[in-house]
Length: 197
Image 1: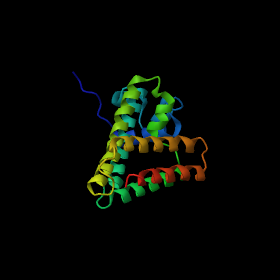
Image 2: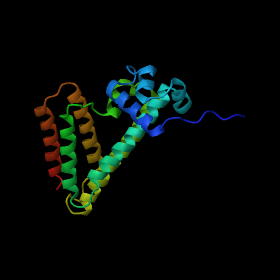
Image 3: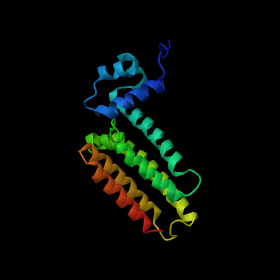
Image 4: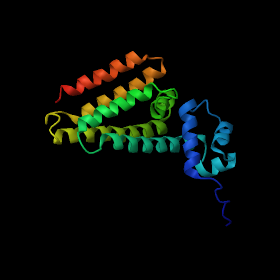
């Protein structure tokens, strides 16, 4: 049996470009031709490497989630005060909503577009979301251990509350939410956290 032609492109780079396109345009609006042109690969290379457009989306979501997890860990699980880390995290998220190239969250965008009608994507988004939940929960657990939060707090529930508010903010901003409205949401999150100190 003859082996297929070797890949003539960097897989991670191409995947990152596909992720960017799905993130900017959504799944349905992104055609195969646009993907191959943006990724700098042939149509056959896309099929050989990723299976099809749906398979490429699944890998792009996984790639995005890995990057996001690493970024969130860098902020939330840094040495020092866990609550200061959390405050910095909320500040970073708020600042992102005001950037010129704001695109929301790829996972939230995809959930709104197709999560309700695509079980495979829904499962992938749920798995990725659980990883993000866990990072916030770990940060809150660190705050409890450091004496910054009460021992009685339910860090799992608080983590879910925080991440769902962040997802909501991304959608609100994409829907035209103002800087003041977004700021109010983040300030409410900060006030919410203070009650557990």
